[in-house]
Length: 498
Image (cartoon, rainbow, N blue to C red; front, side, top):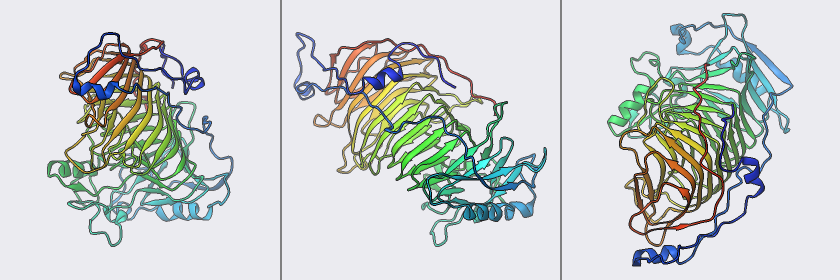
């Protein structure tokens, strides 16, 4: 699952030298305008991020099976009968098994979903909660389908109604809620490459309706309202949570949110949702510490990964992943809690999804915020990444939207070392947009080769080594830095057959 990349410095070598610095120095004879003096007055040091402080390796499924549940459905068309769609038949028996297997220790046990025979390999369920110490484990030929009945997800007492478009949000419970430590959602992977899957069925008409979850999202966007759609997986304050070798398809809203926890591993995850399906983020860590998202394939209609820092986030690694049709690898737009030490290494980003569709904003690498939700983002390193067929390879924007306030975004010690873009879309360009002369973006570009170098830039201090991108604009200064390595050699794998 790893991409062959040459050039730059390999991950192991980089982590060994993490903390080494390269001082920014102004070229001799450079004359600065008044707006440039503030940026150049204090040369910055560049420190390479190390990411997740844990030693993370490929997970293994639990050796202890606490309960085994056999499927009783076929669902060849991804739908069942009217009665079963109204009241999903597997909710209570899966939930009962999960509850009975709850563990207080650090070694999890599994509730395993298996096929009863070669044709009956489907489960149909309403919302589920995974308690502490339990892994929901799907056999390689099993699919768990999420209910299409919005009433199953309704949050009691909410002013919003699940399955509607309105001015208010919060009407839906997630399909799967993870409520305790040392839990997981995992699958058995067959030698053929197939692995268990969870299908949110966002593309299918809802129960007693002619509209799908995806349709609700499109309507909400066109009417500047909010769709009340359920997230697929939500883990909150669930330390040491693992997603492993699981396929996630057609989520009605965000696929995975990991919030306010320590220790999250996503490995071998394959997300496949059309690029045209709005607000279907792939994996969103939020207020999280020690996160690794690795060796995964992510296709969706919004951010592939969005690290949100409404509360403090740190020690995050995103490596050896492949993205298709997404809005890229993002930080923000909430950064008011602060984010530090994030490593983004050896990833590929393709702006077109596996079906040839293009979403609303095909982007590569992005940090986005504004003064209504801004804060400090520091020590973020993008190493040896490759992007193709995108609209914007690089976006570092402190004025992401028109919202205003006193929470000014500041991005410092941002390193891009090893980046190549190819086949960029018509009208493509980059954004390096600091807030003002007192809040500059501190950025270093090394071994950067972009096929389109048009850039909108303001208020940034940029160090350059072997980069064909040289930003200019109000309050922008550039200077040469010492460096080594080269531009990565890129290949872009096709999305695997599921």
